[in-house]
Structures are given as structure tokens and as C-alpha cells.
Image (cartoon, rainbow, N blue to C red; front, side):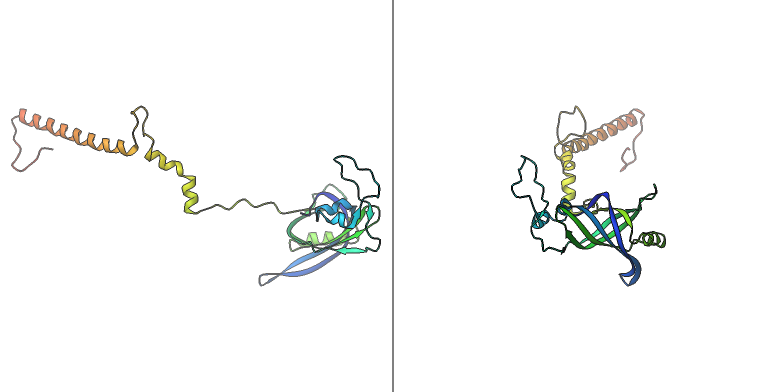
Length: 238
């Protein structure tokens, strides 16, 4: 996928101020036409077969093991400029004027299109492209206009991948919490109790509660009897 990860020199051949539609609203935008002179290996980032379609190695050139041979020879001398169908949306453009140490201007949501390759004999190319964005303001538009026809340094980066969306389905929830059911079905709720399931422990707790209540009532009845008291008819000691 085409991108320029290190700053390269480019000639800014035109700066076109325009508007574009965002929904029903017209917003300011700019189109930049640039030319980049580079080795023909830059074509590999646009399409893996493009360089070999335009160039070939020198006839009879010795090949070194593990080293791809250079391709400086044009396959045809009648080639002028080759228009490409390559187009990208959402790229990030950084522009440095190279004058001082100020932070490069940065533009988001850049459309890259209108690529043309001017292939030169000897293995060099001039890559022409158009960069359009609505991420513009008066200050940066003015700076770009001041460099029209001059050299700038550009970096063009593809969008960073978005994080995976959260799966809110029932199946995903059950998969993420599959261990919770095991706690109720297989595990014990306390250490050293000799094993057993949580349900078994709950049932045992209920039986133990009934026995304890009966013991308390028996003790209360014994206390009443020793005191010589008789409960009222129909009443129950508590």
C-alpha cells in the first residue's frame, strides 16, 4: 500500500483553494499537486509489478544470490507519462518547508489520486500526484500558497488500523465468562470442606439451620419449665 514514511523533497506545482460537500454543508478544502523525483523502486510501494512492467535489468547483468538486480533500462523508449488508477482515502499528510525547526504542518483525511509516472531512462522517475483535504484553515492555506512552485518536504502515511469492535453478542459473553458456571457446578465455596458442589453446600446449610432452630426451641422450653411457667393455650414459646 502506497505511503511515504520518511520526508522526501517534492515540488509543489499548484495550490487550489476550493469547497467540497460535507452532507448539506459546503466546507473549505484544498488540492495540492506535487512532483517527486525518486528511484524507480518507489513504484514497488504503489504496485509490486509496476516497476518491472516499465523497466528491466541490463542485458547480461550478473545476478548476485539473494540480491534483486537493478532495473535501470526502460522496456520501451516511447513511454511518456503513465497514468495510474491508484486512489486512497483517509491518508495523513505532513508538510515541512525545510526553512527552520518548526513543527511540520499536519493534515488528516487526505485523498491521494491522479498519480502519474514519468519514467526516465537510467532508473529514475518523476511521480506526480494530487493531495486533497478539507482539514485546512486560513493560516495553513496561506503557508502552502507561499510555497507554490517551490520545494517542500512531505511525508504521506496510511491510516492507522482501528481497534477491533467489541462483540456484545450473547455467545461472546458466554465465551468470556465460561469459568463462572464452573464455580457453581464443580468448585467448593470454602477450603478444606472435603469437596462437594456449591449446591450441595447450600442444601447442607439449610439442614443445619433447621437442626439449630429445633435445639434453640428445646432449650427455651426447658427454661420455661424450670421456672414453673406454663405457656398460654394455643401459644408457642419463641
